[in-house]
Length: 95
Image (cartoon, rainbow, N blue to C red):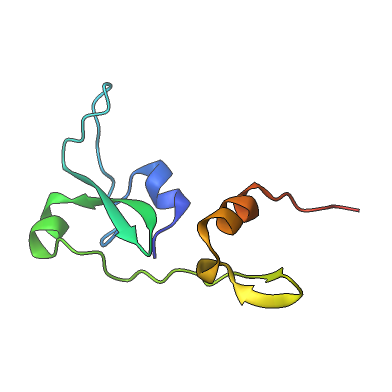
């Protein structure tokens, strides 16, 4: 599962091994990969060993989010681009 924690700590997506970087951000023992999943860009890290075994993204499942549009509950991913951008800008109301 791709998590914010793994990306912030720079952990290998497959084996959870720490990815080491230099001060300038250059990765020493792995790769930073950007995958396109349903139009969304997903950034993951893989160590060299896991990357040589399998270059593809496995063990990933995106969460389907529903919200109301025009009185109906619909998956946000099925909305047009304009509505999705509007949804991203929404803020939760806290009473």
